[in-house]
Image (cartoon, rainbow, N blue to C red; front, side, top):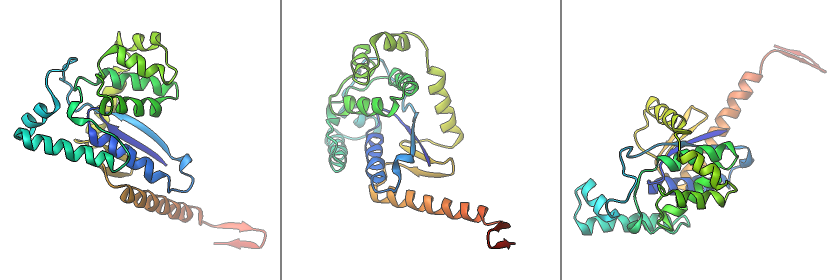
Length: 231
């Protein structure tokens, strides 16, 4: 089974959805055989490389909320994260452009470190409130997974992997993906949004069972065995 996940590091539900998937997979037989691939999706390609507003201000402006409503939404997100074992400080996140973080993730994937650095980037943003457009932050995170400062600077001081990020986004558009997280399973089944762990587990088990039945039907053709032939 292959699961492709479109997500953005600025999206709280992408981190929560990722954790829900991981928890669901713990109850799946042979879950180690499930391939999880992260796909890039930028919620705002025009976002500045510097922090220009607070999270409460940004939410209030985007949704037309007053300050109290914005803080209530933030508290709800923090609580949703807590329910799956994550600690968010969503109210103090430092929102910036995420392209370099996505490009660094592509580089890490080539080193077999894609999922590892994805987790660390999400944690850095939502738990530690780091700016993911800051080269020093990216260098520090990359070093934790064994990627050198030289490699990081080579990526962020060039346009390396930008085309790969854009390819992910073009693929998202072709699939009609307009919001994240979005889980595409074997390019046939989809889960949209940060669905509960129980729902994800049931969905994955149903897909595995369905595809097993399909395989059995495909294999149930005319054959001969030691006891004779069947048609």
